[in-house]
Length: 521
Image (cartoon, rainbow, N blue to C red):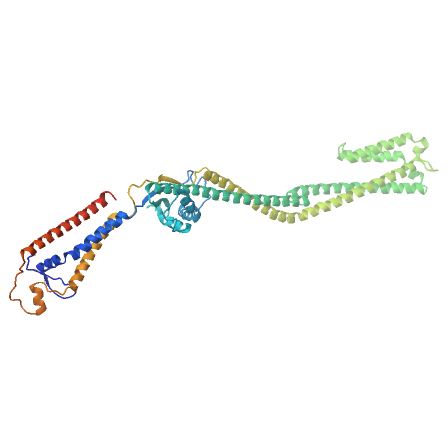
């Protein structure tokens, strides 16, 4: 730009138009208003970042590893996600008791213990600890890893505290998962014991019901029908035998009555042993024609025939042909036979009555069988439900025990350190370059502000342009400055001193920047 060109700036809203020459004169006159704050704040920033105590950050990366065995083979008991578990564990590890133990064991914050109580130290340590989750890009909702970091005055201390924190995360995770899995197993075992007791009670109730209503059960229906048919057959056979016995009773009763009223020789002949033998022989022949030799009536007829043959053989000759006076052997035998037949009739009637009662009982049992079937169905359903619940819980308990064994053997989902706590080489705080740059920028702004303030408060007219603007009159001539040799020498010395001071400040500024860049970063 040519020297005569105009600069369209304004100071303090005066509307004055400045030339390059006048700007240069202004900077020359007020150079220390600009350079003083610039170097002051710049060097102050260097001093601040130099005296600021360094703090080192150590960090470790912990990976969330899935369980070794596939979940479809052994389903885990712990269903909480890794992100929720990390949040819960962070609250536990950052609790007052845990952090107080770390502060006391590692001797943290020795300088702050005189002015802060334990709660204040715990709050300060919480601020120095940072837990940063790491989420995979392909699985935004799943926690894949997390970082643990800590700020400390020394690198070794930061590394040691981070190592202790990672160990707490790993151990607490293992213990918490094992405890939760064992708790789930214990709960399922308690439910299994209750289900076993319930099953035993239902089975006992079913067994007691079957014992109580034995004979009325559905599975005994066919047996009861067979028994009923057999009883009915026996009753029919017994009825036929009873009928024959009653006929014999009537026969012998009439014969005894005839003897008692003096029966005729014809009657005696009809009731003689020979007549009985002939009748029994005819009856036996009829029975043998229809039945085998083992049929009861055949056996009874043969026995009766032999008895009468024995009577006929033992009787006197007159008795064999009948007698007309006194009680003969036939009359005595008839009376004896009547008594025997009557006893047989009584026994058969009692047997028939017992069979009738038994038939009635079996019929009653068969009538109650549908009701018992419904009742047994209800009890059986309860037993089936109890058995299914027991089997289901038994399978769950076995599965839960496998999952608990997996957690206790550290084969479940776990935290694994893949990047141990590092030993930091450079401090993480303070950011010395930022402080230094902020100091120089603040110095530049302060110098510009001081220069503007100086110009607004300066009422002196400098140069013909300022005079012309102030008087609204043209400048006709300029009178040069007349300076003595002594003043010229003093001015030269002053310029040399200023140059020296500026050179020293520039060297100090450059040295502060170099020192910060190479030795303190």
